Image 1 (cartoon, rainbow, N blue to C red):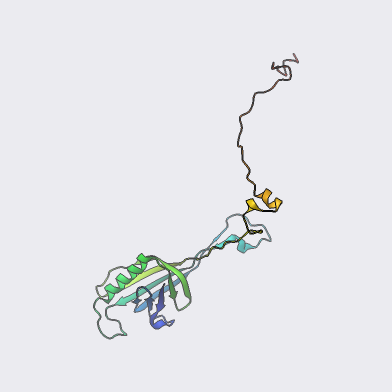
Image 2 (tube, rainbow, N blue to C red):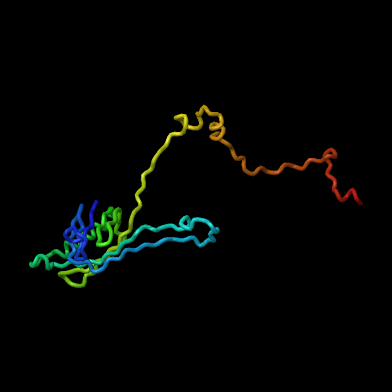
Length: 194
């Protein structure tokens, strides 16, 4: 798992570092945006109902805009190719599609994936870049045994066995020929009145 962390591992607005399989140290965070959204039902809600049952929270999103240069102020010396290395590293992070942890000045996000990466080339020895990340909800499945330790078809409890029995749906059946009460001769109901 890669970790996106601010410069020097603390929560400062200076820059951030990506550590893990690949490593990148940004010189400056230009902007940081924490997005939250929810889908709310468009159907009427019965009075007295719990409103939160009708709201679906969407995964958290985070947008970061950073800056990296071949001559960072903290180093006081040129580091040729540092911008290209940052470009390659960010591209590798995006291509992996792996889960990262992001530590910002406001919050630590776990299970984030890069969903958008902008790497414009404006100057040869520095680069502004932006990335948007979205939280991935990770769940685990569980299995359970039914009462009696077996499957329902072999259950000793007759009620359980009845509930688990196979039923066949015969579907639609074609209508049969109408039978006549007068020995096979059909008569009109109205014909007897006239």
